[in-house]
Image (tube, rainbow, N blue to C red):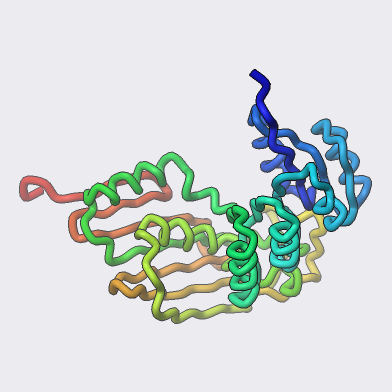
Length: 289
């Protein structure tokens, strides 16, 4: 039996694209067919490494190829909306890296393109599909925790501004909130049953900057890292209230005067609570204990 393989195009071959390429490589019903990057040398190197036959430097040319059925968009945040909409109208299914885009207006334009074309668009919110997240979802869906009325999440880096395009407001759309905060918010919102938000009170702070002078602490740096480029927030926090009365407290940072970095995800219901990070713990009350 000959399996018809879906031909995939990768738009943008920066560091995050490696995760897409390696994952597609494992799928028997998928063929890595085309890559596109503004840096032709990088595009050609990626094509050679993964045995990809078609190389482009203009995403429009890749989208014009009728053989390509679906694309992964791994570009700067400020191009997500433009390329997603173009891909949908070109008849392609889309997997776009998080964040979906930079603004609500862009998100609504993408939503309209999905409705017009009938194509599938998925955002790279991988945290939903983690084994522990799926386990917790089963517990919640089966009523083990009762009504979830409060949740809190933190992703606090004490030194972890990747710099480069991540620290450039024009390209990224923001700092830690749009980079790492969206993962936490999506994960908890998903586990809570995707309630409708009715109010948000938030704060952002630009107090510490890049802190490239700090010694003895290593952190991920973007390929175009430049310590002088930084106009995004250091820290953001928010209280989100939902239509059902539940609330979510979230805070995220690229840099902070803390003892150590931390990542926490906690949900509380009237029948029990759960901590998903830093480790999975379920808390409930049985036999007066």
